[in-house]
Image (cartoon, rainbow, N blue to C red; front, top):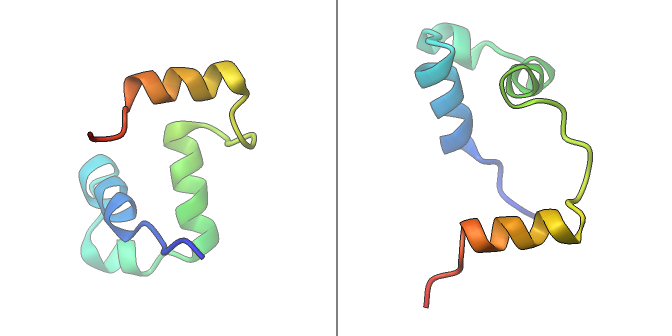
Length: 63
């Protein structure tokens, strides 16, 4: 199981949405997901081969 991406959530809440700590920690999981979707768009599932290739070129694994 992948751990929840708290660092990303806090970057969105504090850095992008400028929420106070009280407002951020008061969000429900559904509200937090809606905020992510509002900023990044709806996730439609796994990328296709071209999308995966593009991500691999853009974000290569360290060597």
